[in-house]
Image 1: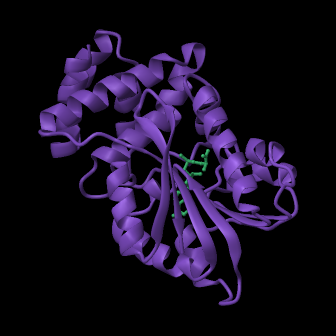
Image 2 (image 1 turned 90 degrees about the vertical axis):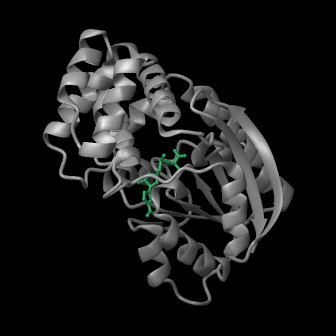
Length: 282
Ligand SMILES: C[S@@+](CC[C@H](N)C(=O)[O-])C[C@H]1O[C@@H](n2cnc3c(N)ncnc32)[C@H](O)[C@@H]1O
């Protein structure tokens, strides 16, 4: 079943459509083929995986994400305690699923917790539960453009969010951020490097289909509202919206932005790829 889906992914990447192969994969039972066929009908090349926050919120609370997020939050809580973080900034906080449990497990908790998140829907869900601090509904790039030079945080963290920023803009943003923080902690997936395009499409097809299949009655919602736009954002060569990379490439990027990588720690083996924490000194 995923062989037909993989072939469809290649055609979408190369030509923007793959109706016959999506129909074949759909007939073979692929949840992702159905979601992609629907997503491609009204795809304007600009739809983000976070435009339908409900699908993302269901996604991160189900399947293998429950154990991933509990590992991420526990790791962050240990880091706050180890560093004695008082003033914290979360970049691309989403609805706070990594942040809030981490704060709940930290004694003493940081006194200021500021957050940046471009999605109004995700931020609205977080706002009532956010402790002392400010919430900016902005991208990291826009946030840095309006930031007073003297604003500083002990720690800026970003969990699975920097992958949403194009590499060129991300490097500029990371350099600017360095003036405002003592340390930066990022959690990202150590995605594999593929030796051929065929290997990459086969892996994407298998991993997305496996993710969708973990959601039972919510599979159509999660696949249609989150996984399909995320996958299209990885396939589109003209207007991509996701730039994952191996952990070694994240380390190199932080060094190029002027940080010193202090520690790189394995957090959790998730079905998509292992998640790692990198702590860097600004
Ligand atoms: C996979 S989610 C992770 C959310 C949250 N950090 C978590 O761990 O659950 C990626 C987040 O990055 C946000 N995002 C996308 N582009 C961004 C940008 N340019 N600056 C900051 N955040 C961004 C999205 O809106 C989304 O909330």
